[in-house]
Each structure stands twice: as structure tokens, then as C-alpha cells.
Amino acid sequence: QQTINKGVQDMQKELKALGPMTANNRGAMVHEILSMCREFDSSYATMLDGGKGGGEAILDVFEGKLTKHIRELPFKQVYSLSNIKKVINEADGYQPHLIAPEMGYRRLIEAGLKLLKDPSVICVEEVYLILQQLVQTVLGSKDCEGLSRYSLLSTEILAQSGLALERMRDEAKSMVMTMVDMEASYLTAEFFREILRAQDAEEGMQGLKTFSGRNIKPGSDGGTSEDLHMKQIANHVSAYLGVVCNQLKAT
Picture 1 (cartoon, helix red, strand yellow):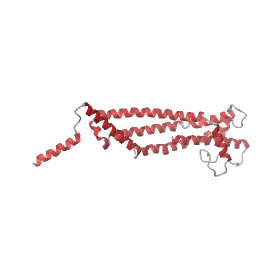
Picture 2 (spheres, helix red, strand yellow):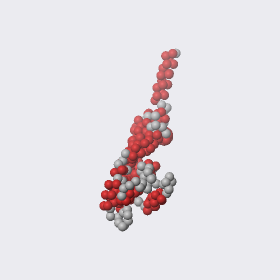
Picture 3 (cartoon, one colour):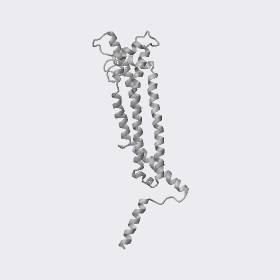
Picture 4 (cartoon, helix red, strand yellow):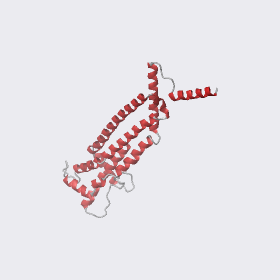
């Protein structure tokens, strides 16, 4: 009797490892496959919304790595006084009689925004890798253990998920590049009105700040009038770059 009971227990363990009986007709099989796919989708969404391997990792890419990469960019070279003088003096604006030619501003801002492309593309690539790894994690999780019985189905889900993620990655890269190019070309008069309002505001009032958080209006700590004017242009360019960087991180 003891031998029989042990044999029954061994068979039950083996049957449990093999899983429940598979469907014996096409309709039931399709239903079972769709049910397992829904379980995968639900488990993937749950892990993406939270957890160290999902939502937290993606949040860290935007709030940590992207911010760090942007801070390390050589923006100071763009709005250094020597570069400001060089670009402004070489620029032939549409209205060259103005104190600060439009084309000079545009070239300085374009040079600064061009630096944002590489960190943005790296950010998209890192999110793609996290999402790709998440697919493999979910497939091997307890919630989707039923899929382990169907290796071909698991392989197909992995392949199709990879293709979908690659397509979304390429679309995201294109969108980011378009956004940066758009900000460079869509330089409106409203921004300069906001700059003037910020400059005229009393000290301590909220307004536009430079990329490093300083007031837009340059201090009168010596220097020629030309240098003060160039510092003012540098602050304007820095403020615009700061606004775009914040929009990029929020998007």
C-alpha cells in the first residue's frame, strides 16, 4: 500500500508539472492561447506600472540618467562670451539694424539644441532595452508559467514583442529629433516678450531663469557695455535652452 501511495504521489507531481490537459479541438485551443496572451499582457502592464525592473527603472532613465547627461553637455561653450561675439558678429540678420540680430540668436539656439539630440536618443534606447528585458522577465514569471508548456508560442510572443518595441523605438527617436528641430526653428516673438517681462520684474519674482538658475538680467559688475550686452544675449540663449530641456524631460 505504501508503494502504491508513493507511486500515486509521484504521478500527481508529474502531472502537475506537465500542466492541465490541453484542449482537444481548435476552438478551445484558440481560446486557451488568447487567455495566456491576455495573462502575459496583464502581467506585463502590472510590472511596467511598478517595480524595480519596470516603472522605476524607466523613471530613473528620465529623472536620473537623462538629467545627468544634459547637465554634462558643453552648453557653456555655446553661450561663452567669445562664442556669442563670434556668432553675433558673423550673423547677417533679416533686420541687421537691430541691436541683437535675429539670425545670431537663431544660430546660437540651434547650436545649443543640437547638443540635446544624442542624450535624447540614448534615453530612448535605454527605455527600449528595459522594455525588451521586461518581456523576458514576464515570460519567465509565475503569472505566465502556463506559457512554459508551449515553447513555440513563447518564442513567437518574444519575437513579436521585439518587433513591436523596435518599431516604437524608431518612432520615438524620430519624434524626439523632430521635437528638437522644431524648437530650433520655431523661435517666436512671444519668447522674447517673456524675456523682457522677466528682466523688468523685480528681484525675487518668478520668471525665466538661465540654464544654471541665474536671473536673466546680467549684473553690472564692471566690463564694457559690449560685454554686458553679450552677457545679456548669453542669458537669453541659456534661458531658452533651459525651457526646452525641461520640456524634453517632461515629455
